[in-house]
Image 1: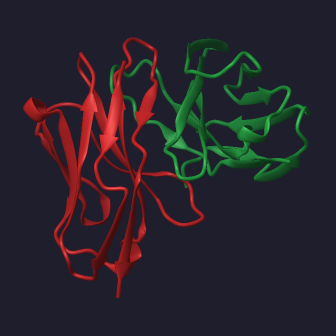
Image 2: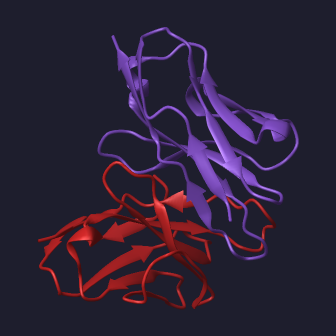
Length: 115
Length: 115
């Protein structure tokens, strides 16, 4: 069974601070990894994804994530956050084979950026 | 915009009633999955439909059922509603056949309140 663990449930940062949100996953095979963001009152949006290749993945809005296979981790980073980054962030793993595309989400991290 | 549309956006039902939620997948996508997101939780996988058949299911009872139509749109039906069914129900679409790692795209969700 696949599972995802997000370490920080609520993070408060000042604008221009650096961000790192931890994510660890558990799955015995090849995985695809995602970070989704949910702004207040809006739907889930894809920030970035890792399928294969370069373990450092760059996404939208200046976010990046690094896949470290030995640590089963996929941490999200941003060098300098803005007030508009206030949202909930979900790490997700898709370890399905064939046509089965079950995605397992972490519990989410609420990020609050203070101006 | 993801191209995934859901209806209705909000609804209130009484315990014991039945509800049907609808989803139109993104153009070109042949797979639909449904997720339940309770307050303060990450989305939980309910089931997935591919070519009009359920091909994966999460830990939800049989009173959660679904359909996929030839145009790949989908319905989620929940019978004998319970108070704990109150949640945001998310529909997601993807396109199988492109190999592993298909990205899924979410709709804005249907907010269900059971009273």
